[in-house]
Amino acid sequence: MKMDHIFILNSKQHLTGKDILALTFIPLMNGKTSKSKRALDSIELADKITQKSEKLQCLTLLYALFEKFGDAISKKKFKEVFSMTEIGKMIREEGIKEGIKEGIKEGKADLFIKQLTKKLGKIPEEYKQKIRNLSDESIDIVSLEIFNIENIRDLEKYL
Picture 1: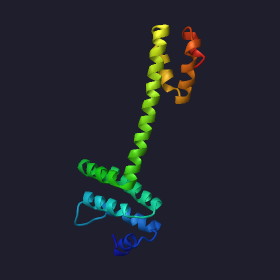
Picture 2: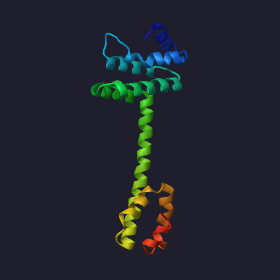
Picture 3: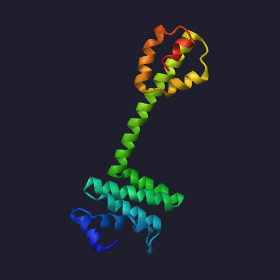
Picture 4: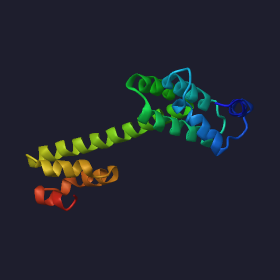
């Protein structure tokens, strides 16, 4: 990386598109250090960028390039370093929230299927799959209708 790019990072000035490209292509350039070392150094530099949108652009491009050109060991190190960055932490937290939300939806669907099985007996697999594919809100609505469902045909109108 040229010294003027490092200066811009250290001085907290805005990066230009050219600066962002220069930073993200460091791992692919020839040098005395390995590609993985250059990639890790690039991530650490990108994490110092103060502007969130510029930081996100750099880290996203670095991640995409490294996924394409990195070896397995380097990718693992890259992900470890990336996960410690502010953006990595944000992505992990978002993933956790989505996972919890999806887990709750699956739990509701499974509970409803168990209730239907208790009420109606064996439920065909295709109906179970349709229930699992419903939105969270739809599962809530159809679950409340369990008192009106007397047979499998009654269930069809809710799916």
